[in-house]
Image 1 (cartoon, helix red, strand yellow):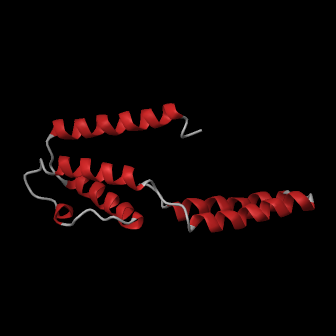
Image 2 (spheres, rainbow, N blue to C red):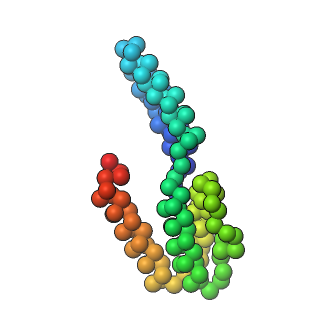
Image 3 (cartoon, one colour):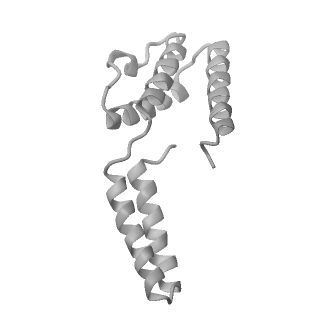
Length: 128
């Protein structure tokens, strides 16, 4: 499951606060770490997942779900346009995908697309 960005930023800030600050003795460096913790708190409220990528993934999951004999309930709702809605919809669609009896070829195509996307992102240096 993918963590929310707020949770990721909170984890980084907590680690800095609980592990790094106590180990830093230099007052200037300590102030810099404390300022970084404050910045992370502000960023957490402003940063969002890439909506275009979330929407594309949801659309591809929907195409796979369409191959199931029983219609998944997530297909009844429109795809949200806001970031938080897209993140929640992605989770709901992935949950539906784990329960649906979809065509194996459709699932393989989706997984191949997903792997290809991640490899392209890796090659761009996005994960560096």
